[in-house]
Image 1 (cartoon, rainbow, N blue to C red):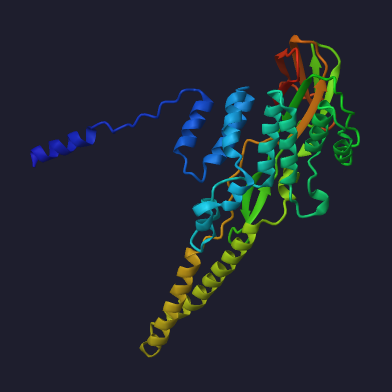
Image 2 (image 1 turned 135 degrees about the horizontal axis):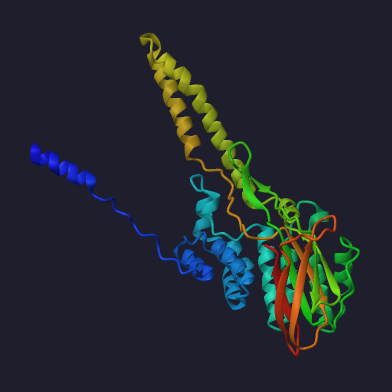
Length: 375
């Protein structure tokens, strides 16, 4: 017993096994790629979008382009769906088991950023195609909300004008929402794309989580002023509101599947409640035990059915999108320049502590594209 006691004391004094935290490189893009590599196939696009945004903010444009190209499949690929989509539609499947392509506003933003990168690479024609694709994805419930992205129309027209065409129709569509938009300055060679705040995120709604709702984004910043080399300020107003774009989406095909699942689940749960508790009571007296067992089995079957149905809406979100998009254009000679960006609230007051100073190299030919994220 003495030896046993000593052994137990020694065992109790042993240091716990401490697992080392995985090595972290400090490179957010590299770490993001590791997450993508280890993510299930259904979540890879979600992480590609998120990491692409980080790459844009770090001005690692080649990596952002690669990630967006991988995350933006053709329309045919989305319609095909594959085995994951079939599984998600089944009674036992969850919507989040399908491959993530995002809701219309998320896909539109993917094409928006891809268009910006095309323009940066000297391909305004491909940029315009991206903006038109993004606008077509906006299948809102109300006719007035369909294809109502202001900046997408404005950039569509701007690219057309830069290519020597007439972008007047696109400009008129954009001005229908924001009448103060300036005429296209085809001589402007520095295009500044800005974004403000934090965008919307998805939440589940409905009785059993079958509804898709949104937590609205937020931005104190409502506008910015861009100055080159301390000179004249160029205003950039918030033109597109991503919370509006998210919440005005039209009905999804998958909403019908979720509503059907929710109805079956609620019916099963109700049947289970009706049968289980009375059945449990009736099993106590011997003279009603047979009836009680029948009701109990009926109730358990209903509960089992309700428990197997998974009607929850997919709430995976591209969660580092902005709340607002803005844009302005400048004329600058080729060479190095200093840009200063100040941000303003809804009352026109400058917001202290978040001004940005950038050093840019303006190309001798073509347009220089600058991306500025307030957050």
